[in-house]
Length: 347
Image (cartoon, rainbow, N blue to C red; front, top):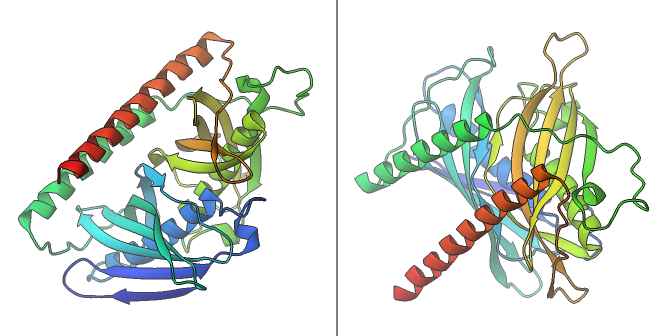
């Protein structure tokens, strides 16, 4: 892995590069979406932590608070180089916005293509007191409009985080040794999956809390299992809705990552993923919801062509309600994408 950066009074930029290995990809040779998300978060953590320690304040480490919706524009393959570039685009008193672009490079032909664009929000936590949020050194903007647009994005994500936290009491009951022979295919219960992970030192930051990228990679693994069970085909991550990190996860905690199908269209499927944490044995805190997000997957043939997705069969009232909510998100995203395409065509 290589990294290069630029410092100065304006927004800093860095680039991190790494070649994609077989253990980064699925059986079809496509790099896991979780691997890409982990690289995006690593770049964001480097640039935001570096910036937050550029002033005269106390030493701190930037913790991931939120990832905005990110689309996987093009698949990346084994042997290609991922070039991840990150730039700080806005700072508030206690948070940093980082814009990240990912470009894949075929080092044999030199061909390059953009695979991902993401926006991440970080909060700096003091090294000596992890519950203390320190102040962020301001950046200089080339134009006043950049600061105004950044402040608008900051207020929008702040509001969305509050709304998500309010509806965060839902649970996914773990499936213990499910007999899929007796369950009807294409139901929520048939594909529902969980993964249990013990948080070790290699998963954590200097503060002893889980890296956001580690969590996102595990979430993508579970969502991928749900999608594969539903389709029985090769599947790839198409997009991830905003990921909200509600609470920090300590080293030594046991986390349960649970996923369930919520909605299917003709060519895509939405999977809801929760991360619940059980703290240290001697900690008084009970299990809590740490992270939540919606992942969207598509089904592909062996040749990499899109395949129709089997319709999700909803059985309970809650499943029907979640299906309609997912349909609303799908139509909203579709309308927004069409509006962007029309706007781009006009220019």
